[in-house]
Image (tube, rainbow, N blue to C red):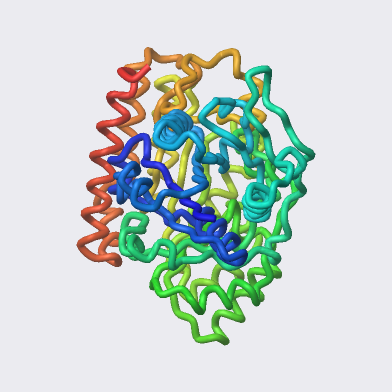
Length: 452
């Protein structure tokens, strides 16, 4: 069977100039299908936007689409358009939003929705189509129906070590385009899935039923041997919480003589409790750690179920600074912030002397406890606004003023003289990317009130 896997265009293509990660999920799906002898092509429509042309040139029997909440309408429009071109085409939708809100894809132009890990599910779908099997008997799917979606038996999450390695030949024409700010070219590698934390604004831990799924260090090293890019992003939900596993992985990478620049997610408490682990990783190439700092208030952090304190934040900053590892500090601005809260957050960030900090809006994403608790308060349900820049809960300040305060954080929280030495490590490209990020975020934050 001929299968076309599509990474849809972004709802805001300008952000693609700041970061663009490879479509790793589709590379996994393609690898699984090729094991069964199917002809697979992967179209990254962020880079190659002519979806109709690619479809007509390949004439697939099945199209697979993936995406986040902000992609919902984009996915529906692609599915509708391709169905019109080929009524017998089988359209399958999966990914994060399909997993947390499958009913949002209850559309005539969509044939099946995959819930959860899709590698084995999609292989079974393709087999059933080719052999007259019953699609409704496949675990982990939902079938659109005007009367309400029909759900099959849930599929337990797959042991990550049973998955094939992602097939990066599928993205060979695009690979030079994948990056995150100054990390270019950049490959993405998944070493785990899920998280041990229980933050109320995050759906990642609940998707796996609260389990933290791990790949063996040996398998990760074997995959890294085949990665050509000098920069690697560990796209785990949280990379370092299994300390023994990551300690072992560091040893194996060193013994294998693999030298990359690594970028990964790490929690404040993990950094504070295990500085020796980050020191070991710094010696083998750890260059940057994305740290969800979230807020300046212990009370707010507790309400989020974040499980860390301001005192731990301060220690984590110092530990990474002393190691020469850049902390990519991320804060979430609560729509309930007053002007005093904005001033206090600004003062907190400056006091910690961050070399890099980003600011998003606390957003009730579908599938989270926060969404379940505050869904009735949403001021908009447009999927495109689930971008962490638009406030979807009522703001204490007038919306225009809230957005100005958000933009002000980007301008003032980290003085440029503090950013400059860090960016210098990454050369002129790093500086240009930072300036581009600033200008784009400021433009978008200040105009966010116009999009509702």
